[in-house]
Length: 321
Ligand SMILES: Nc1nc2c(c(=O)[nH]1)N[C@H]1C(S)=C(S)[C@@H](COP(=O)(O)O)O[C@H]1N2
Ligand SMILES: [Mo]
Image (tube, rainbow, N blue to C red; front, side, top):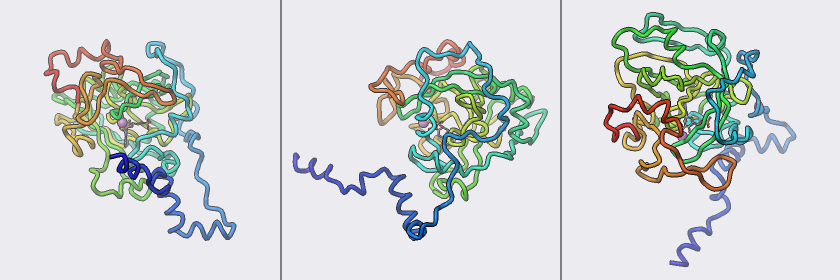
């Protein structure tokens, strides 16, 4: 037993290197980058991961809405901007550099489906039409890490109102861009691209449902979902779809990316509940990015007062996974 565990940890240094670093080094070698570097030729530099894109920059910092404050410290900006889930750029957390290749200007957004006012417009134009404010929100990933960030943006209900849902409409489906040339993760064919998420229409028009267009007082960075990213803080993080290109109002329940991959682990509702474990781990506590130790996770991630009413008459075994 002892010998076995010694062997298990005695792995070559190369295998202990995080996948992202290892891959980058190997790609550099395979791609001839090493030769160029040796010859003193520098590779093109990518934009700084801390840099905000130039999308309606005059709107930030936006006035804070005092209704949405927190009982905990904000996550340090550098940490929130460099620890990300954005599978389009790789299935690990170190995607912030790669995401800088995404062009977010121009950015066509389509609003369609069962609406009186279908439209396609540029994200910057849409953002300038909307009442932009700042809100401090928690974010709880299903992987049991969390952060607290200052989003800027607009209430999703404003977009729904502008679209004008027709009678019988029940859901809002949101879709991320598709561009495998830039987002290399989209070349991994076993994932059901594009990334899709959905909300019931009453969830989408709940005051808390927010479209983030900014973060930390500037336009939202690419790695966090520029130029339009959902923030539904009472649900697990995967519901907060990034870099949206299409909003569709429909009467059919949208099939989300993660639901298609693993229905039993990532359901449609995905409301946070510390008492309902993920099939493979506990959800009782969370690790706050940038802090030591763990803290208890709260029902609806601390937003029960705002959202519990929407689920009061439902089978409670169906709303927490
Ligand atoms: N398009 C898209 N949206 C996405 C994801 C993704 O992989 N692709 N990951 C989700 C998950 S699992 C989480 S926890 C959050 C992470 O947001 P952050 O990187 O800004 O912290 O984005 C969500 N939105
Ligand atoms: Mo997540």
